[in-house]
Image (cartoon, rainbow, N blue to C red; front, side, top):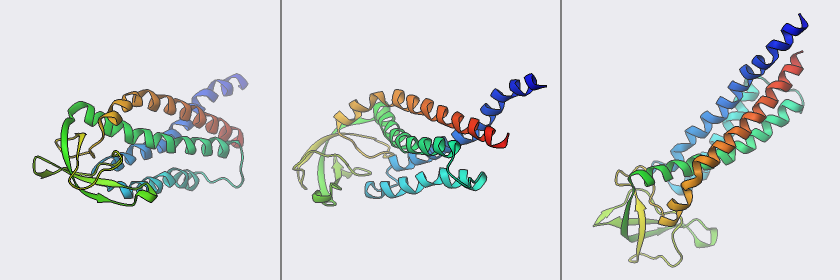
Length: 200
């Protein structure tokens, strides 16, 4: 009988790990919306932060904890890693789109938004007389209306235009995403094991 319980333990932990990990991965996937032109760059941090709070609210609502224990510590650390994952997923999404169908374009700056003092400057661009969907986020210094800048843009307007160097630097995103997911899976397994101990 004891051996039978021990045999069931790994499968129980795997079973409990799944829901934890799914909540974090689903939230990170939803954060892809921040990478699109549907959300203005200056509002992306607000949307991302609101989404980041969702996993812990859901996990606490479905399985509340009266005090800080091993399960809570594992989930909190996984939650912190989920913020990293959300950022990587956003970068990975726009990078994938621009690498697959992006076009190199010599664009014209038509407007500057935000404040240089707060590091929130974004730029509206035009290409061949037509406005470019979205805004350029990390432009070079000294861009003002009337100046030209070479960017990689999405001809379908799904993601914001980016500097060519940004697109090139984002090629390693799939590896980083994979490593982060593995680390989070380990933490979720630790939380599941701790939960099993709580219920024993």
